[in-house]
Each structure stands twice: as C-alpha cells, then as structure tokens.
Length: 134
Image (cartoon, rainbow, N blue to C red):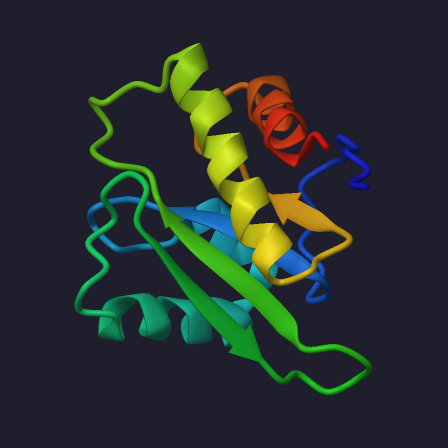
C-alpha cells in the first residue's frame, strides 16, 4: 500500500528517491543545489562512472549510500532521454509504472520522485498507482 503525496521539492537524504538524468549524464543544477554539494557530487560521480548508463529512457542505476542515522539513502537514477523527446501522457504513465516496480523490489514504503522538467506529476503518480494495484 503506497501513499502518494505532492509536496514541494525539498530533498531530504532519507528514504528512496528517483532522480532524473539525461544523456549528458548530469544532474539538473536546481536539483544539485537542493541536494547540497556533498550528496550531489557523490551522485554525479556515480552516474559518470556507470559506463552502461547513458541517460536514455528506461535506463536505471541504483545508488545506496550509508549516510549515518537510521537508514541509508537509496537513489534510483533514471534516464530521461534526449530533451527533444517530449514526454506524452502515456510516457509519463509508463515512467510511473517503471519507478513503482523498482520501488517494490526495494520493499519501499515511500518513494520520492523528482519529475523530469515539463512532465505532469499527476500522470507519473497515476502510473505508480496503476502498477502498484493489487
């Protein structure tokens, strides 16, 4: 049973996060700023070192970081494809379903999704719900 909530984009290093990265293999400057330099640099290095990950759609890599405290940070980095490949509503639904399936493999109770620029969060959330339906 997964709760879906829409909140302001405040990055907290807890729980499971899904973060978009395009073919340039760079985090968005806005997201990197919200994460802070330490975490943003760790993620950026992980993406750059992942030779099989090119930022194409439906590509994913996991990063699990022990940051101290109760639980490690888990980040699912997912490819968004080229900027000219605009997300349609079916694409956003498919993205939500894919992220939901990945969260289930981690037995996550919470999934924080950073939506790609220009993609409706509600469409991604609907994809999550449809995939998680039992």
